[in-house]
Amino acid sequence: MAPPKFMGLAGRPLSMAVSTVATTGFVLFGYDQGVMSGIITAPPFNNLFPATKDNSTMQGFVTAIYEIGCLMGAITILTFGDFLGRRRSIMIGGSIMILGVIIQVTSERGATPLAQFIIGRTITGVGNGINTSTIPTYQAECSKTTNRGLLICIEGGVIAFGTLVAYWIDYGSS
Image (tube, rainbow, N blue to C red):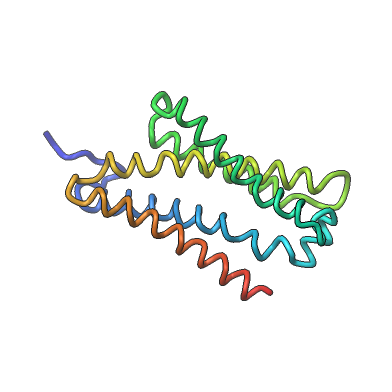
């Protein structure tokens, strides 16, 4: 039986491509976790969303609603993941994240920019929950048994790297 092929890749090159995509997904997860820490108190953010200015409860809500979205995405993929398949689930999760980001960045002064931002942040969380629930399983299924555990541990470690990148970007932008 020939080794599996995808987009012309097979064997080690395919394994490296899957690992690169999986790692990128977890860098994004860490980045999304950390980026709000610098944005939430920035004057331009507070000018656009005045309800967050000097209001720790609203700041906490805007930050934490992302995690609620992640939970909803994880529960959704727990229910429908086997039906959809791993690759399709990851693509759907990425598409949902893009939609959520578009909703967030198009918030502008007007009727309810904070509500739009919160909805976009929740939707982004749903996509990220789908991906962070699916990617480790997909990578484990595509990996050799000899390095499966190492690859999964690397995914966990790059979450911290993504958070580090977000913190340094926040620091450099302040």
